[in-house]
Each structure stands twice: as C-alpha cells, then as structure tokens.
Image 1 (cartoon, rainbow, N blue to C red):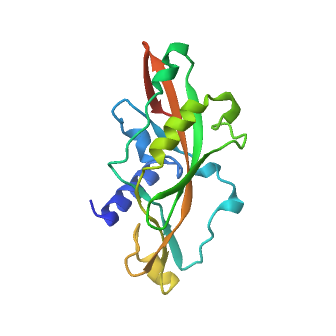
Image 2 (cartoon, rainbow, N blue to C red):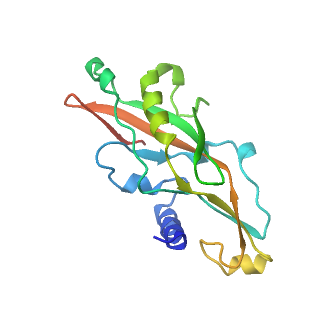
Length: 185
C-alpha cells in the first residue's frame, strides 16, 4: 500500500478513535501472539520535536512483516500473572530500529522495570531490533497556506526523514498453560 494511503488510513483512525496516542494495532488481532499499544503520549514534552508553522510531521509506519515477540517458554512453569513492559524504540532516518531500551519513568502504564523478569525484555527487544518502518517525516512546506491544503501527506512539501523514538507497551500473559501476549491497556 502506498505511504500516502497508509498515512490517510492511520490519520482517519486517529481521528475516529478520539485519542491521538492510540495505535491502530489496538483494533487488530495479531495472531494471538502479541499486542502493542503506542504510548508515545507519555514521552515528556521536552523530548518532543517542535515544528514550525509551515511544517507537519508524519509518524513512522511499521512494516506489515514485522515479527512479534512471543512469551518466553522458560517462564511458563512459573505461572506468572500478566507482565506489562514498556520499551522506547529508536527509529533511524532509514526506518531501521537503532536501539530499544526499557522505560522506567514511573508512568502508570509502565511498571517498574525491576519487577519484570529480564526474559520478557529480552524477548521484546530481540524482536524489536529487527523491525522496519517507513521513516518518520518532517514535511516542510513553502508556506503555511500550502501546508493547510494538504491532509496527512507531504504532497507539495519537502519530505525530510527524521529519527524518532516511540514508546510501546507489551503485555505478556498465560492462559491455560500457554503463553500469549495481548494488546496492552
């Protein structure tokens, strides 16, 4: 699917969902293996990009072939309650994941990283390291008026790929002795 069509679909979903930080993934079953919730809204304002009036921003788009983490087999016998963890994923200008790191900022959606078994972080980070994205774009338009005539694309503006960090929340759980990962709330 073309980027402009994917961006338009993403934008419409954001508007209809009523929450700018809600991920499309929340509405899609992912083979019962993993769920991901975009928690970018928890990133402090000081760490966010500022745009000029004649600029807009397009989020990176994940590749549909990105693999999803699975529940670590070595932890099944422990019958643990659901384990939520948050990762900050840094995406380069080429759309490749440059790094990922646990988030431990005391946010309600992000549990204390010391309370989570490291195997869960390893499972998530290993898979995330291979993710690919269409890169995030800073769209630079010649004027504010030119920007206002465009919806959810860089049409008529210069596309400048930019590195970004996104925050994701993964929830690992067991059901009937089988590991699964669901969409985190």
